[in-house]
Image (tube, rainbow, N blue to C red):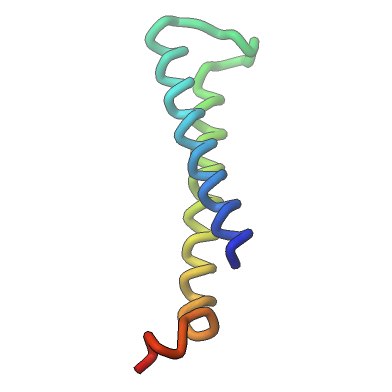
Length: 74
């Protein structure tokens, strides 16, 4: 499950980076990747953030019983 959590954090970081890049591109009216619209950055960011949320929910629901220590159960 540690790998899935790492993938979730990487996805959340990528989403945050894309939001920051999209905001900068909108403020300065830049189009460095020659996409049709600058809004494409925000669309990609939402996909990464939704993936991160889904992974975090899945790992939380799955790992409540199997991954806790015996000491913390008492």
